[in-house]
Length: 209
Image 1 (cartoon, helix red, strand yellow):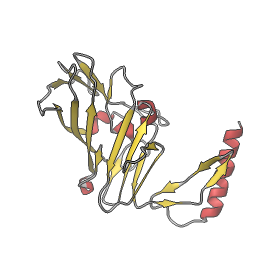
Image 2 (tube, rainbow, N blue to C red):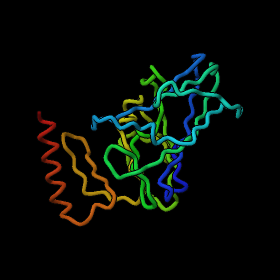
Image 3 (cartoon, helix red, strand yellow):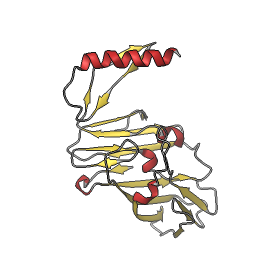
């Protein structure tokens, strides 16, 4: 889950639960880059206050073999619960950013994955700040759940950022039977209808290739 209790600190809190652990020792890793922006980002540098426990509250010790990996020992058949904070520093397409009015969450900058298990399914719960009313993402919502989403694997998760706040949606369009939506934060004033006509033309040209 992601919690935004104190966005003025420019941090957000991550709670990560891993069940059905089969390995005696488990290595968790954080990506160093995100899909669509192929530059080394060193996301682990923004991770703070790591605590790891099991389902009974027992502390699980860990090591850092590398700057973006965490080795947990003697965890077979235990449920692992990680708690940590992500510090955000700048507004940028490839990094998460949080302030009093919104949150832009890059999931590669947020979630650790079990080594060699990147194909595992993932669910995410968002606990927004009480002043924010909208959540948008490419992930699929879980039926019957409030602000909960699912991804078939970590690749899908890492390719689906979140935008949270008081958002605005422009006029949608359909192309080849697929609905396309454009949702943003603090987009300014412009001709929204003309803009979406141009977006549709770009999408059509790309999909025709």
